[in-house]
View 1 (tube, helix red, strand yellow):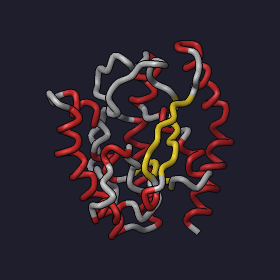
View 2: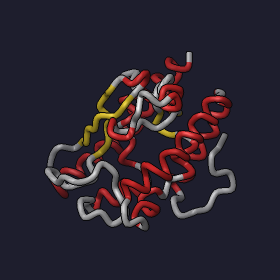
View 3: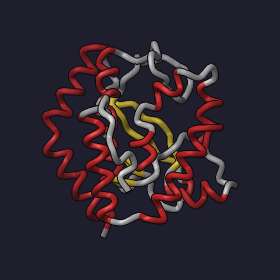
View 4: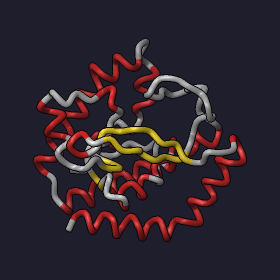
Length: 204
């Protein structure tokens, strides 16, 4: 039932938002051309890889680390706006329609940070990854935190990621329909007002 609900909501959202999505696509093309979408392999349910979709916010052909810090020279002008308001994540509605993701669930990681031998990872990956989760709300300014570290990847792997996994496990223990609705609403509020402090940071 949850999967049907998620797919139905996301399909409806794609239809309603289609004019807005088209505007974003045009903005990406005008600034840097094609491709419009950025595809990246992420680890899904039970460790199965899939292509996560985003609007492209970086210049095509630019290589670099798998995580992005604030001020990254690869990010375009339009991309900075899209990332600030999390609009680059909207194509993941299609990932949900395809059954690869859920609206709410642990955010999918790139393979280099996933250890399937770790029981914590196996517990987190027993469910479909989500577009948003409590960790996404708490660390919505992750790029700023990473920019303050002399070694962003090491800081992410040793400090941020373990905390995210702990939040993911706590979410899975308390997961409920209305709790997920609260997380979605909190995520929307953080996206619309990115610079505002919110009293209930994790929403669950």
